[in-house]
Picture 1 (cartoon, helix red, strand yellow):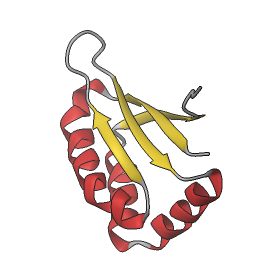
Picture 2: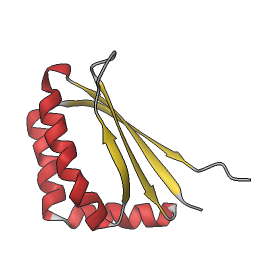
Picture 3: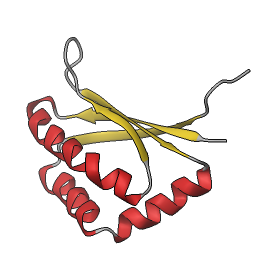
Picture 4: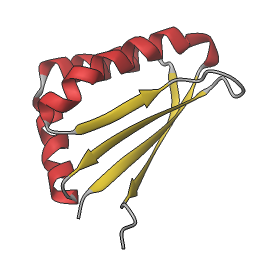
Length: 102
């Protein structure tokens, strides 16, 4: 059974451009490390401090293997460091979803 990780970010609304730069970097890093990236989604209208990401994996075990590879990836670690340094993410929530099928 595949799982989709739904990530909800609460952003500093004055640092959205930095979050978008951070998101664009993940567009190549995540697939390289084994995630099937559906996409990152930025605020457009309405709420200006919430962004989302969706990534699918074959299983929870595949997600755990991906996380291990991500922590060994130089670009991935540099992107985590970028977020820590600039503090544009105020909170992050992860929800693990499964697709409803007949």
